[in-house]
Length: 326
Image (cartoon, rainbow, N blue to C red; front, side, top):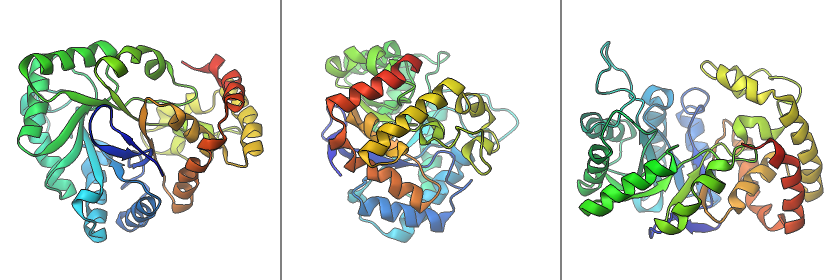
């Protein structure tokens, strides 16, 4: 496992990391989380991603209980959470749902820290942008989280380049903590934002990336080539919106072609897709997910595929997937 700086910060993150979206609480209990966190760390992973909204806050609880059982030195791992959606804890969600106002953010960080059982998060993200809150208010609140010792770095997730630039400019103007990283979706079929929209930000503001969904929610593993299998992500409650994309005939045909490339490289389809995302030098870390230990180990095997992605291999992969990418 190699380590990369998070943008221009001094923080180094493992090139592959482990996230909890969909899986923790829904598919992974504390015992399984502990087993997989330990296996990931043994493989060199040092960054673990979470969010307030995952499983209605229960994902943070599961991960926190696993950390407590593992008794790792706090300096040895990096953990994140994200804010925006809120938990809608009462019948009037005004000011604490789908927002980045100061009232919500300053209470949200306290709630997440309590659920996960830590004194601080290393990384905190604005999970989406909020057009109804002045950007200055959000930047001040995120900067204050760091000033108060509740977080070390802050960033954004799925913000436009213009929104990131605006936040950075506010922080620069008022000498506040600047957004260091963005967490966008990035995979063989979803590329434009990372490769084109953010292009100027890498040099101009030193933006780092902690990308998610390298397997396109499982599409790039090949499991959806014959429909939606029982027990897969596409069958979970609340995940029905994924089904159309997962069963796209053209993309599944491309996945079949990628399978031939993976076979020649002696790796799985998933390993090829993850390695492809990690090969981008702008990516600080690729967030992987797993509901089983065997799945985790297969994903982490992508580090061994990276050296095999020669220019010739990349050209073949590009020819197969680029026409279908957005």
